[in-house]
Image 1: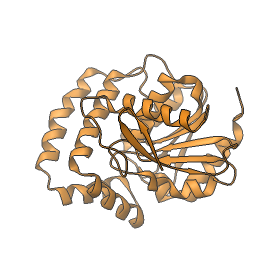
Image 2: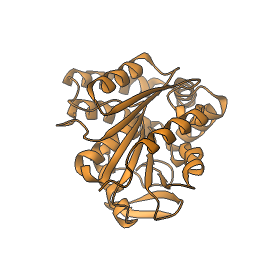
Image 3: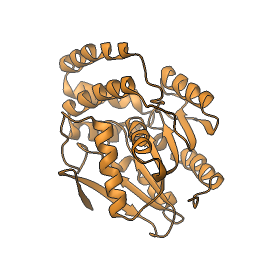
Image 4: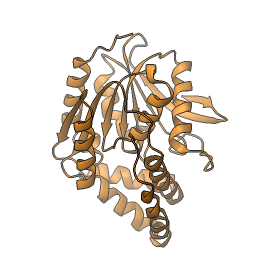
Length: 265
C-alpha cells in the first residue's frame, strides 16, 4: 500500500487487527521493509504491525537531498500514522531507523509509547561538530570503491548469516551507491545536530554480539544515561540482528512489550 506525504509516497504494509496496540518498524540505510518480515509475522496475532520503506528506499519515492532526511522522514511517518488512525505506537528503529524514531519522538512525543533501538545511538545531547570532518573522507572512499565491491562489503560488514548477507547485497544494489553515501553523510549531520533533550519514555536498546565495538559502546553509554532503559546483547548476530537471529530478537522484544503499558494514555 502507498501513502502520499510531503509530495512523496511511502510504501507500507499493515499487519494484524486495527484495534490492537501498534508497533512500527523502521529499517536502516539501503534496506527496505523486508528486513522486518519475520517480526511482522511473529507479532501480527497480538499487535498491529506497520513495516515500511523509508523515503528513497524500496518502493517509496526518491528523497529530496536538500532536506534533512531523519526529520523529513519522521514528519512523513507521523502523517502516515495519522492516516491510519494510529494515535500511539511502539517505535522500533534499526541503525538509521533509530535516528528517525528519535526525530519522531522529538516532533510528536505523545505518539511514542516506548521505543526500541537496534544498533543505534542516542542523539542527545549531540556529538562534537568535529564528527563532520569524517564526511569528506567518507565521500571520497565511496566514490573510489567499485559499486559491486561496496555492496558486498556492506553486507559482510553488517550481517553475519549468509541469508542476511544475500538480502543486504541485493537490496543495497537495488537502492544504489548514491543513496548509501548520502544517508551515511546525513547520519553524521544528525549526530552533530543532536536532540535538545533525552527521550522521555521506556527504551529497549539492543546490539548484536558481532557488531562493531563502537556501536556496543554507544549502546552501553545510552543505557547508563537513561534510567528507563533495558540493554540486551543479541548473540549470534551482527548489525542486522533482527534478521541474523530473529528468534532471540523476537523473544526479547516480546518480553519488553509485555513489560510496558501499551494502553497508557
